Length: 321
Image 1 (spheres, rainbow, N blue to C red):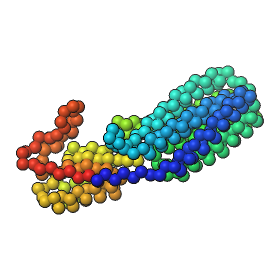
Image 2 (cartoon, one colour):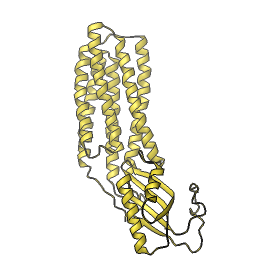
Image 3 (cartoon, rainbow, N blue to C red):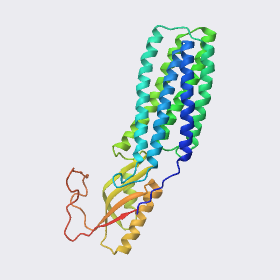
Image 4 (cartoon, one colour):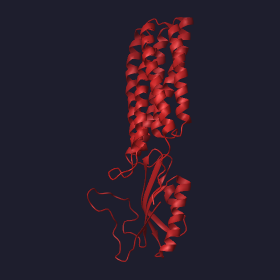
């Protein structure tokens, strides 16, 4: 049996729709203000806010995909739709930041006067907007979802950018040091890259079937071996179906016991995996004779049967949760 918990996502969806509409309106206003104030920091932030609008749209699409049920072709459902959205979102942040680095370098060499009053007013509005959106996303039921986290990083980057712009405007007002406008753009871009790279790495781990973050293979094997009745565990695979859904498959060596006894062992294994490692989707193959290559790593060969050489008298039982 494979229990899948389809969480209610309407709350997160509504937050994303409202946030998207507000962000688009703010982008238009900030771009106009940036041109009027001749502020690269404002224009950079407007560009970042535009990618935020795209990020929110992509996150909304990811939420839609994740809510779709599994079917005959997508047997695991669309959990990775949100992971793909997070990956694309993070990549756009990195590309945008590289462009801002380039523009900031030129503005640092050739500083230009800016209208600090407009900078403060627009950045203040941006800070309120982005903080409200960030709070809404973090309070929703999807706050631990990688897709929502990626969108939240966009919002956090903009909120920090607004703070930097306000500080820069105050410095310019009192000192006429216009180079700080470009220096703040450097700072904002650096913070964005630092947060985006972590999202890229985690989403790639999921897409490439890597070990879920925070888990260690030896700990999982050790916990399973401690279950009464388990002699050994091998051919163990642990991966993430989505950002919040983990799966496991393995071969488990036990004594040649009746099904009633093996069921107790299976329940013990699934209980440990669920409570200690939050793994709720498992496929456990019981074996009564040690495989010839059970001590070595498992090699999966395409278009060929995957198995281990066993003695003819071996009987296998599988258990799923």
